[in-house]
Each structure stands twice: as structure tokens, then as C-alpha cells.
Length: 281
View 1 (cartoon, one colour):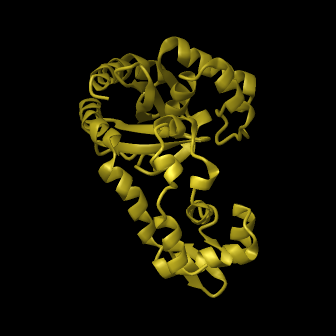
View 2 (cartoon, rainbow, N blue to C red; view 1 turned 90 degrees about the horizontal axis):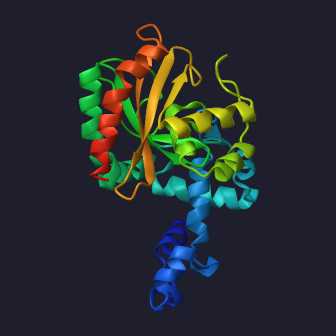
View 3 (cartoon, helix red, strand yellow; view 1 turned 45 degrees about the horizontal axis):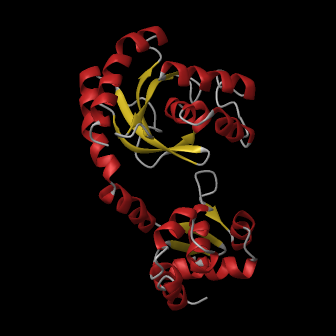
């Protein structure tokens, strides 16, 4: 597929059956029809997502395996992305370019949620002199959408755009707790629970207990499950309808504060921030 063809696919208008139908709103709520989706755009984004921290450079064959594309199709998408400036090629290896950051910046600059949450994070961080962050659930992970360190570098994961496994993150626990028990059980069943530290909860039944505890208490306290030395207390962020749309946490180094001290000192201001944001979300 040529670069021009790729662009034409992405720019193709929606079919009249959805745009002009009097039942358009109902159709959108139930999900788009397959004929209204641009397969080329979907596959192009899948190629971008094939690259990660563990595999920053990939061959055509490796991209094909990771995306489920044929080798020929993977080659065409990589060449198209290279032509557009999103991918660079060195012999047989391909890698993403900094231009990919534009996609994330478009969200950060246009989305309402990070703009509303960020001032509250700054208040928390500088009042507590500890790092604070907010994230949203995306499949198996939590993506950080806003963060501030207050001068304390606690963890490299506390920065916008960083993804962490939801099962061992405080923000992930409270968002899983917002699900119905049957839904969170189904989510757990799909996971590979890997021990990232000696403290990581990896038994499904134990994880269910922790999620149920977060559901009952309204917050989650996680002690060095994501990485050694990192302790967090997290609370869900709800909109005015009571729906959980994100989560917020305060993170400290284990050498500075015990878990009991975290709950005692960090939880009250965290819950105050939660109540204030509910009026804005």
C-alpha cells in the first residue's frame, strides 16, 4: 500500500448509512458496523503498538508476528509509516521516531481530564512533599495521564504516558474495584500475574480479596508490588454521576513512610482532592 493510499483510507468519510440515518445515535452507542471501519488505519496503529520498551527495534517478520499481519502487509505498513516520518529504518531493523509522540501530545493537549486533574495533583504534591499522579485503565494496564514529583523522584513510572500492570498498581486496584465483581473476576482470569517484586500479589484469589477490600474501603494501599521501595495509596476519581473515570494516587519511597503512616497522613488529603474533583468531572 502506498503512502497516498494509506492517507486516502484514513481520510475516507463514514458511510451514509451511519452519518445520515435517523438512528445514527443508536448505532454509535451499540458500536460501529464493520463496513464503517477503516481497516488500514487500525492495522497501521497496531504496527506502531508492536514496538515497546523490551523490543524497540523490530524486523518486518517480527512486526508481522506481533500484529498478526502477513509479512508482505507488515512491510507495506512499515514503509508507509517510514515515509510519513513515524518509523525509521536501518538495514533490516525498524524503530519508532519521536514524531510518534505527537499522537500522545494531541491527547494531552486536547483532553479535558488531564487538564482538570493536574492542578489538584500539584496541590497534593506540594502540600505532602510527595509525588502524586493520575491514571486511566486501558485493557490490562494503567496509563499515567498526569503526574508531579514535588522534587522527589520516586519512580520512573510516575510520568505521563507510562503504562504499568493494573493488577499491582494502586490506581489499577481502585479502578478494578469499580467494576462489578463478575466483571473484575473475568478481567483477572485474562491476566498473566507476574511477580515484579517479592511483594507482588500473583494468586488470583488473593487479588480478588485485595480488589474486594478496595471496593469496601474506597481506596487501595499497595506496598512495593510494582517495584521495590514504592508505596502508594490510591483513590478512584468519579464524575458527578458517580462513575469512575480515572484514579489518583500519592506515592512515597518506603524508607520515608510506613504503610500505616501513608494511610494516616496521605489518605485524608487524597480523599479531599477526590471530593473536589467530583464537582468538576
